Length: 84
Image (tube, rainbow, N blue to C red; front, side):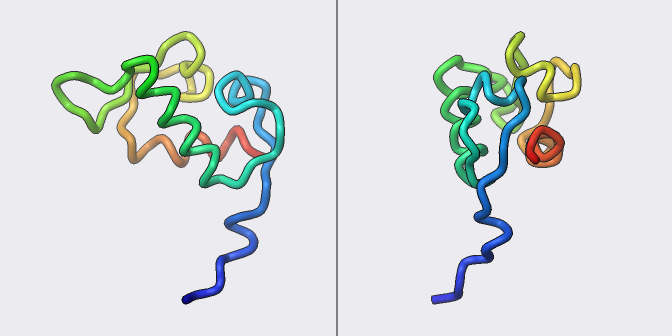
């Protein structure tokens, strides 16, 4: 089995906006994405017609750069700006 990339798994501190979804504790990027998906599914924010699109509510809009809808492929890049 390949050794995990330590930098990829390093805990990162979320911004105040992102912490509303993930909590304020530092988390690896993989856990941040998992918590975001849990939030998206819990709040029924996947677009009904195109499941690859995510509709932003008031909590996600600041994380998504003010956009009302993004593709799931854009999410990683936008979320990365909210991690230190």
